[in-house]
Structure formats: structure tokens, C-alpha cells
Image (cartoon, rainbow, N blue to C red; front, side, top):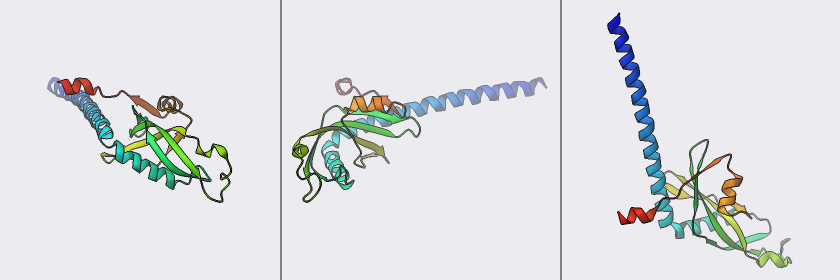
Length: 165
């Protein structure tokens, strides 16, 4: 009977240690994947800017305006969805619109004003993509604060120490 108790105790300890090691390994893997995604975002900025403009223009929003041009700002803010773990980049964007001919906005003088917003990108299937989601009137840090219930901010990768190593 004493031998069975030892076997169960050792088995339980091994299971707990294995579970702990698995969780630790998984966290390291996720962190490495996030850092790689951050580097890829920097490499793909030009393509992502074009992709964002195309996707945002296809949404038909704002009504009566067409997307003329957008310029992504520097310093993306990265975050993880608290529920499903998806990885996001929130980037400041300056947008210019023009009125659609015959539309309600054609006589509005402010149409030509530049608009500042936050563009939303998501890392899916090991690549960055966008659905053209935009958060108007909020900078990326403000958007993260606004969505704090669903998004967990992720610290930026320190590339200066990585390149000097």
C-alpha cells in the first residue's frame, strides 16, 4: 500500500511540474511570436498602408465621402485580445477625404480637412492584415485606453539592444 501511495505522489508531482513547464514554454513561444510580428509590421508598413486604404475605402464609411489618401504614423501600439488572444497593432493615421459627386457632403467645406484617427491591424495566420477598421478622433494610446476591457497592451520590442547583441 505504501508503494502505491509513493507512485501516486510522484505521478502527481510529475504532472504538476510538466504542466508548469508546458505553460512556461507556451508563454515563451507566444512572446517570441509577438516579437516576430512586431518586426514584420515594421517591414511591411508600405504594403499595410495601401492595404488599409483599400479596405477602409471599401467600407463606404463615412457616408458621402471617398478615401483619398492616408499616411500611417510612427510608433504602433501593440495589444492582445483578452478573450481570444489575437494580436493587434493600433497605428495613428492621417486621412484625407473628398466628397462624392452629388452626395450630401459635396457642399461641406470641412471635407478637405485632414482627419486623425487610429488604424487597426490584426495578425492572423502569421501575417498582418486589416479590415479597414478605424477609430476616429483617438490616438493609438487613447484607443487602447478606450478598449482596455478587451485589449491588453503589449510592450514594444527593444530593437536597439537586439541589434547591438
